[in-house]
Image (cartoon, rainbow, N blue to C red):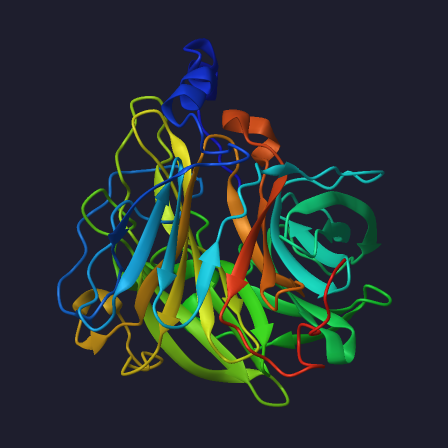
Length: 416
């Protein structure tokens, strides 16, 4: 989703770009120093209260939340860095930050822009889609250092013409066994499958009617898409109209995570998920947000969420990655409104967070296996036509604790 604001010119006039840099001096430092360790997790339990009403906001983006809440059943060791936090779930998965600045993703010979979804295809190959209406699935070359997961090079090398793409492509999930990819469209509330050989539309996924366009608030519909272990996942960014209000500084937003499976990718379970609240409103913009912008399905069946927030007095982007736990969560497929409560939501544990002045990370994918057995993770940012100084970048992270069989998706082969 692109951030549009009437006050972008005000930000420029006030020198907010420079102020953002001062406000988070090392958010993109190459080697952030480690500070003291602390503990913190975030979770949501049984729902029972209606979210607070959000102040009006125009079309924008964001996700992620400011403060981690406590999950009594699980302890998480958090190592704080300047501008970024790495939280290691004990035991289980952990995400570490190798300390590289957001890496400029060149559009190469293409007009690729406003990239909001990315999916790994093997080796150094990735596919991406943008929400600018372009009818191309972009081919992205990204080389990682096999020792530490740092990016060596990243460039859009070409575009696969896909006339069936809609006006607002937000998520992409590659299906290697059929050499195809699903793409979610936020405006149409649709998921369409395309051939990666020809770009032709080869199928559609029947999305539950609760996600229909009439229920979407402020263009915050199907933002997420991920596929692994035979399961396709999607979710809306912030609350649908029947499910309550958008995020505020006191409460997050209820969204629905949808699972598809089987030969025809039919709708299966659906779960309620609570996003984090907005950290602080700003006098300089009217587009503060906090929502769920992508999901990452892992080959072992676990799922991560990427939240993004735009907030703070001097507005910045905060990205957070959570490990989800569906144990005991209610299937809300037949629940007409989440605002009424009476269900148990998905719980979430914070694995990593980062604060950025100009990188609006909207997409996440699991990359290749590194030499030590860990896996690279790649985030991609939407440059939003340059508003608020946004840049088209990718950010490397490292995932540890994932064990899969050779030949599984992604291939268990090391990069060099």
